[in-house]
Image (cartoon, rainbow, N blue to C red; front, side):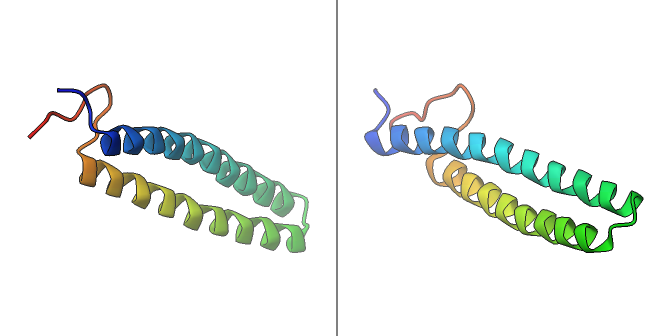
Length: 86
């Protein structure tokens, strides 16, 4: 049987969340790199700012992962496998 519209919508949303997780991970990495660079050159204000930014981005990243996990749990989504009819 064809995938339900709810499951199809959940799959699209999961794909969007996965892309956003990749972008958020890049932002965390960039902020951490900038914080380390600021520390190396002795710029303590920039170090604190970038460290705080990295922490904020990590919190957003954790929330994105939580949402994706909830979708996977609710709709039994797995990569490359469609939900079967019950």
